[in-house]
Amino acid sequence: DMSVGLGRQGLLGFVASPGGTIKAWGQAWSMLTTPEGMAVHLSQNAARYADAAQHGLILNMSPLDITLSLKGAVKPLLDRVPVLGAVNNFQFNTLLRPIKLYLYEHELAVLQAVRDGKGLAGVAQEFPILGRVVKKLGGKIEGMSDDALKEAAADASNNWVGGIDWAKIMPGGERPSVLRRMVLLTEGWTRANIGAFVNSPKIGPKGILARRMLAGELVVLGGLATAISYATMGKLPNFDPTSSDFLAIETPWGTIRLQPHGAYMKTVARLAVGNPKAALWQDANAFEQRAQTSLKFFEGRTGQLVKLGIDLAKGKDYSGREIQNPALYVGQSLMPIVAQSILRDLQQGGLEGAAKRVGPQLA
Image (cartoon, rainbow, N blue to C red):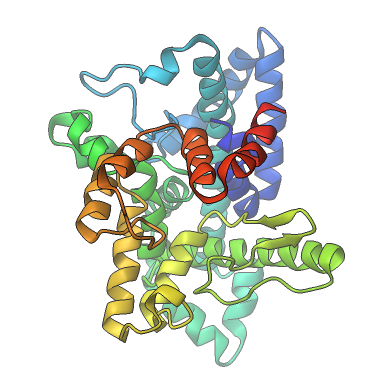
C-alpha cells in the first residue's frame, strides 16, 4: 500500500501541512537509508511523540487502520509477507508517524492563535462582522487550556490521515471480529473520514480544524485541477459538487480524480440538494434520490459479501445495470479485479474488447 507516499494519506498531509509533510519525507528517508536514522530521530523527538500520544494522537498505524498492539491482535496477513510487510511498515510507521506529528503540532498552533487572538486569526477577529462570526464559531476556545486544545488537535489529525483509538470503541480492547470486518470495509478509515465531516459544523476547536482542513483541500486541489485542466485541455474542471467528476483533472489522457474526500463531499452535496442530473434517478422524487445516495455510500464501504447480497436483492449492480444471471454475477464478483474487467469486456466486445484490456495489463 503506497497511499502514504504516493496517494491519499500523503496528499492529505501535504494539503493540511505542506512544510511538515516535506520535512517528514526527509526524516523518513534518513531513517530508511542510515542504520542510526531511526534511533537518532526517536531520541531527538521522543518528548514530542510522548506528548502527542498522551493527548490522543495514534502513532501505531497499518493499511487497515487496525492497531496491532491490542489484546489478542496479530499481524495482518499482508504484513507477514516479507516485501509487502516492509513496504507497509515504512509507509504507515516510518513515514506517516512524523507526518501526523507535524500535522498535530501545526493544528495546535492554529488553535492557540485563534484562542490568543494572534496572527491572521487575530486580524480576522478585528473586522466588524467577520470578527463576530469567527468568535462565534470558536465557541468557548478563549478559556480553554493547552491540554484541551492538544486533544482537539490530536482528534483532527487522526480523522484527517487515519488513526482510530480502537480501545475506546471495542469493549475490552478486542480486535474487530472477522464478521465485523467483512461487513464494514476498512472501518477505521471510514470512521476517520466521517469524523472530519461530522466535526465540520461544530462550534469550537474541532469544528475550526475540520472546516480549515476541508476548505484547504478544496482550495489546493481545486486550484491544481483548474491549472492543469486549462493548460492541457483549455477548459475548466467540473465545479458541480454532486458530480462524480467534481474538481477532477481533465487531461488528453483521461480524467484524474485526486480529491481524497471527493466521495464524501459528493454524498453530502447530494443529500443536501438531491441528484437530479443522474440518469438512473431522473424520475425519482427528492426522497428517493437521497435514499439512493445513502444506499450507494453504504455499499461503497461494505465488504464484498454484503455488496453481493444488496445487489442480488435489488437485481442491479452498483452502477445500476440489470443482473441477468445471478450465479454468473456472484462468480464474476469474487474474481480478481483484472479478471472481472476482462470478462466484462468479453461480454460487451468479444475477443477484440478483451484484447484491449489484456494488452495494457501485460505491457
